[in-house]
Image (cartoon, rainbow, N blue to C red; front, side, top):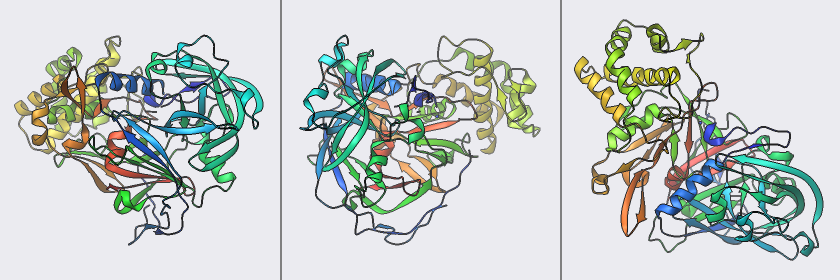
Length: 512
């Protein structure tokens, strides 16, 4: 989840960053033996349409050193476990306590934001507050008044309140005098129907509203953890009795991953952002990120979000149904042959749409009015045609590499236009065709991280029927911040993830 705020800091919207700089990737040998990890277990529930909608709303509001045994020093102990729930594969949350004696709250553990907030007993005019646990400062012996007011704006709503300080219990760790927000107003329907009381942000201090330290920073300062890491294991097995997953502070649990972690450096603090390469579909390059794209790992995002140009190619490969983009098909129809001829004549792909007259070139890349998604009905005009042209250039260039004929190339581009995602990002697929769909792979640190169809297709229940949707949704971030990928729970479910705030790096290993 990402946000903007009114507390002297602007935080880019993570689904408009939280949500999406070319790659550099260090790594280091580590040993897995000593860490005193503090674990939070995740319990599992079934997926339905209402929950997915709620989670999507919540989200909108919201050089490698490898060696054998490389992760060993991060091993976690088997003690101090607190459950986290996996609600329908769309929200992962767990219990914390605030105050003395402890007051319990269910929170989403979100690496895409940095603040901790829960409803306040002083929240009188928001229905969401009455439907969830509320913090009562008068009941806590360790409460310290702060009073600084604050507002955080998410994509589809807003929370407002004020800062307080108190002890926060996470697992068996007591974080003393943690600065957090007591909310007095919650305007989004998501907060009404959500299964969580609040949010515990695990991003960097750079995007923290009001300068409040993230909980992991407080743990480090108070020497509560043996190692400066926390790690996620998300259990995606709907029938598992082993719970929904685990969040470990201060280490990792070797039972939940295979082999060693591949580490990449954080390239831009705020979100857990790094550089990634191409997305491969069935062994073939999609081209768009071959020169590098930014990516963030976000436990608060249910799906995978990325550039519409690539998501349309994914949809085409897996047979996902989207809407037909009139502008896209018009560009291919009127300018497709011209784009093809310019590319054959070795015109720089970044200048093709400028020469055609659909975009303006700023010396580095084509530009147009910023838009969130090329399929938004509200965004009509030259900016949409520029974006459609840029997508067509990528698609046609990919087909030229495959030595396809002009007819096949233009037909392929038209097919991709028909596979553009729907405005809300959802694309449905035939559940019976999952076994025939291709593997998809992200290139990270020059290694491929594969997702099988069973991993990137999300199943949900609606009126007793199983519906399957693509785990990919379109999300466009213009340069210089973009193009950007958001690797949410679909990716984190396949790959155990280590967030190393001591070394400012992120590690991935196959989940077990």
